[in-house]
Image (cartoon, rainbow, N blue to C red; front, side):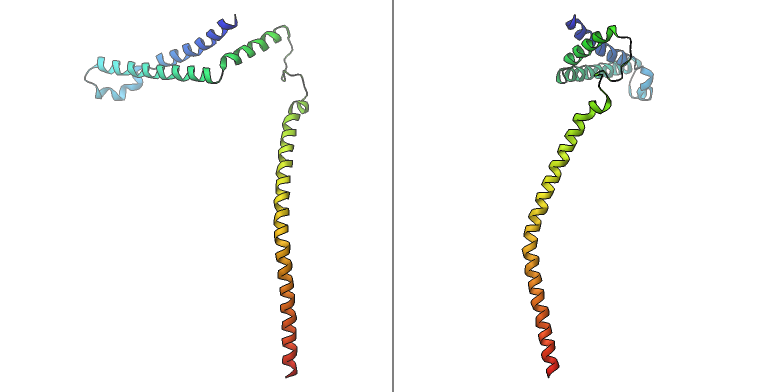
Length: 160
């Protein structure tokens, strides 16, 4: 039965796209009628457009269906649907967990990411400080020596 559901679900999508494409009327292309020699050529061109569009849509749906493993997802949805068949209560959260319980893993992951970022930032700041402190100490010593030299020079100028 699961195999029938898979085929049915895919076929329903394809049938929907076929109906969509077939619903495109020739009236939508009336502004291009003047470019065709007769009505038959115009209708052939519109039909070629429909066929090309339908082929592209079918190709995209089939590729998406296979790449996203929609068959498995349909099976999961069907099993969830069959589990809930006996229940008449509406459940907004099928897990039955409270909101805080349900989002707790997301919060923990965010906190772990934040902690990792802060640890990296702290390490970076520590490196910068270790590089800056000796330089600033050297600068402070040089500035102190310069100030002292200026005082000495100013003092000797007063003597003369």
